[in-house]
Amino acid sequence: MCDISGTTRSEKVTYVIPRASTPGMVLLGGTFEANNWDTSISIPTANRILARAKEVMPALDEPTTRIHAHNVGLRPAREGGPRVEAQFIDVPSKGDLIPKRSDDASTDTKTCLVVHAYGFG
Image (tube, rainbow, N blue to C red; front, side, top):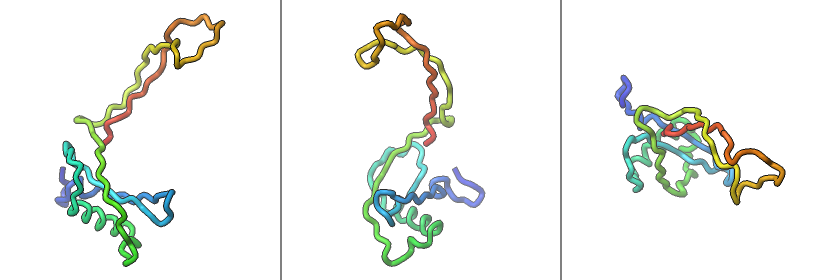
């Protein structure tokens, strides 16, 4: 996917997330590469991510900035976009994991609303 400037969608995904557990540390990303299941680290990709993050957050360009680790994650997306759909299903209301009162005379199933929301990538 390219926009009119010739920049691919992969080159436009940028985020900087502060790490609450470690003050002053941030998580940088990312990419959007459909059907790429390679989990090996790509230094050229990491360098592009860092360069884009520095544009968003110039403080990252300080000499004291250090890279602590490289991580690769997969965020599967669906062809045709995400699935967002509501569905009522019958689920068991009895079993070892579902405590029931002894005076409960209801049926063995209950109808529950399940909302499918996945494949956002």
